[in-house]
Image (cartoon, rainbow, N blue to C red; front, side):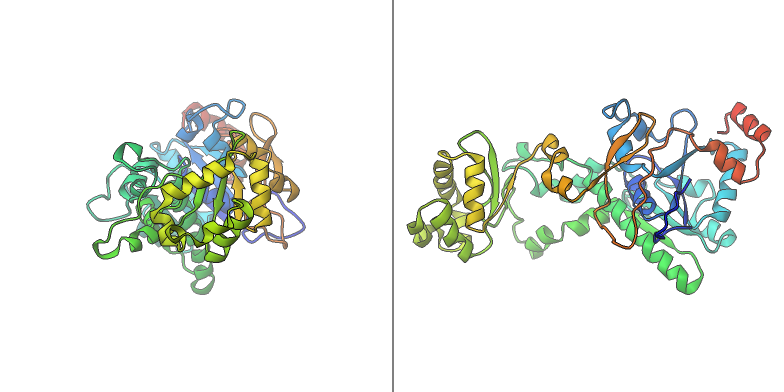
Length: 401
């Protein structure tokens, strides 16, 4: 159930019903739950959201599922049975938002298209999340995150030179993009409903979400121009901007943005002030064109220094820098600790650390409730709908829940 606090949250009183699986829709609805919405996650009896089975890395729970499903209630329904459909319709009669990322066409076949629902529940906002969106030749094509990274051009600019060095993002970037546009789209639809009194439909595609994020490389390659070259962890067009090894085996990430920083870098970091006047490196486009020669100079300079010593010089020169952390380094990051960024949430595996939502609002505390077990809230939700204990037990015996 939704927790209450002395400070009202923006979405207190909003109920979201979600037919969701994997990442895009669950990530969207978790953001809504953070703001106080009640999110009822409808799952298949017995198996639930298939992301529950991706791995067992979090004390037996799946890492993806723990990340995207805190603060939700789990209701199991076999939507192939009429009794389950009746329960879902009762939920939607009281809901503000329906979110779904089922297979293309599945929601419409169950009578859950916006057109069908709007006639019965005019206040209901419907958010459909899919790989390619409604209409067009790709409408029914299966879509997974890596496939959208490929179709959306992300792979073409990520990784190192050569086709064998294509690299995907290390997290579900297409799912995350779609989930965030669904989240902001739902917030805007709630504002619109406040003016019109009517629900509306939001159509979010993973492809369009990721292509929006590809705006810079697309415009860089505008009108048939060559795209930015793949440059691994370095910037493709600004140099030096990327990772460099230090003498102790560690790696430092640094970035220069202008000529003032280039002069300071030569003087205070490399201790080679004369390099700033070298014609090969006198402008960014020249440094980028001659990056192999410049990289060797930087590597030779850093070879005598530890990571800490390099970063100290970069700080003194006011050059942007960062450590290349692994996941354990992020768990222990001093900035996250200093800003009190971590909370504990309940789960079927006990208490787990969970990061506060990034957009902190001083007016309220975000909701940070537990990760639900499969069907954990069946009894409470069905009782709210007026079902007796005997009726709930019969639904359980018939495999409806």
